[in-house]
Image (tube, rainbow, N blue to C red):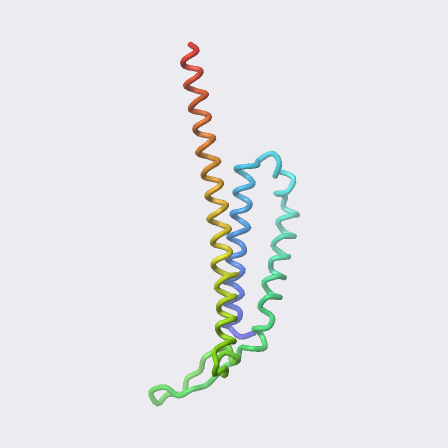
Amino acid sequence: MTPGVGLIMIIMFGDVLQVLMSCDRYLAIVHPVNSRSLRTQRNTVIVVAVMWLVVSAANAPLLWQHDVVYYCFAGQLRSACINVNIYSDTTHSVGRVFYGCFFAFAYVFPLSVICLLYGRLLRHLRNRARRAMASALAELQCR
């Protein structure tokens, strides 16, 4: 595996881990009793292992597409690890599809899920605080 492919896998896995942590926090705060059986160490290990497999499988084609390309710049021989399919494609269709999918599934989708979960979590906390305040005010009025 070339260093570039490893970096892409780490970035994608980091996004997946952030989504999983957001799900865990949401379940722990919004559904603490019901989610207790789901949020175990065993289930965590299983989910993280499955995510490693999914991210690795999604990036497996990149293992064969990346290679070191040597070029001359300012009189010096340099090298770069690049996706040779994109580099050699004159229509740029491979790059558009690859980077479009990468942007959607490694950035937009995880960010959307995280924002949705934290938005619901904040709404839940705000409603709980309002109920607690209304309850405290009702108790004070009864005295």
